[in-house]
Length: 492
Ligand code: GLN
Figure 1 (tube, rainbow, N blue to C red):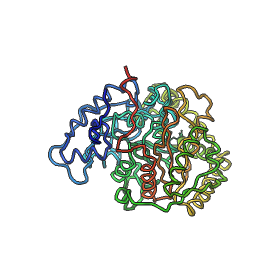
Figure 2 (figure 1 turned 180 degrees about the vertical axis):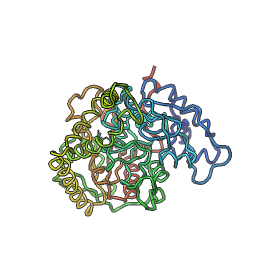
Figure 3 (figure 1 turned 90 degrees about the vertical axis):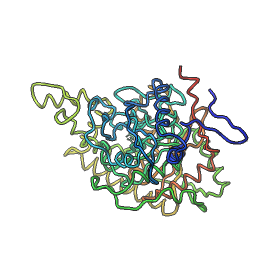
Figure 4 (figure 1 turned 30 degrees about the vertical axis):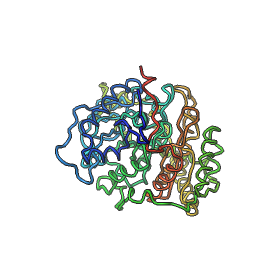
């Protein structure tokens, strides 16, 4: 099939190749029909998702509004990671514990997108309760990387990233507790943005680690990331950590950001796969020519980051997941006492990774251990915060590869330490609440890799602005043509 063709320098794209921003504009100007756009995506999902398996639910009986769209409308189809509530859909968290749980209210983000006339057409696969980096921990099925079906798409928002990369949806919302929006975006060759903690309401997001969870967009351009975040952010009385702040992200995005000072963390590069590191170095050279300054800095506490992240996130998770006891909702295994019913429901409902984390969290917060583990981890989190804020006093942003390792083959990694190391470069943003984005920086062989930009709290617009500058220089999206994997040939 001809993917696109150029005549006299004009490039004609197929409908599904447009960014969400372009689609929205075309629909609002009535140059294309909203229904036709939605049908195009649904058709592609039917064609390719039996292979990629990025969706766990699809809705074909969507409702579209009659009449004109307003200036603020964003009438494009989208999908949600299946831990974000939407009326009319189940919220399974890719867990047997919630396999049949029907959402009883709308998340704030879904409500906001609904008000902007966006159309939710499906829910995406994920690692169970967002615990993982590969989407292999879904209780239903693993999702495949559209660039290589034998490899992982990253996680835990792997379904969202794979769907966007394959052109099955223009954008999706994921959740990022330790890198779950950025890592799969990097592994699938798309853009993933985690806003500052508190900028986007978590109301209706199933809690994993409440002090770090944040909802963010997975899409195909930095402009889309800014636009979508602008649509979903804002104060919400239903989330006590949501801040009152006016946020303008798209208006200054094309601004010239020079002169910029970027910090590259030495210890991160020391721990990065050779191919990724050399791709990253090539990109730095390109950016240096463009006048962006880089210094290599040392981050002494880098060794503590993953242990601190796991102690805190597991502790919070063990408390958050206590509610799945077979009483109020979700899977219930009948037994002859309430204790046995609780035990069997949890035992049958949760998968291995989730159980492991609950056990670890209960251990770290138990009466005899909490000082040594939980409290110390929180103290160390403060020290990490101080050290990174010192770096960010001197530099505008911190730049690194998004992942230290390449996409491995499904089932290949049985070593949990290696698996957890996939989050090595991303978790600092969650521990400190910083905004962070992953954008494509090119390919190692046939596999896309991402570049991460982290900024100061509430400087989301600067992070997006730098990302847009870098995106233009790297030129992965040159002429507006986004590199899509060639699914036509590989999907039988
Ligand atoms: N991969 C990380 C973990 O397994 C992060 C998950 C997330 O951001 N939801 O904890």
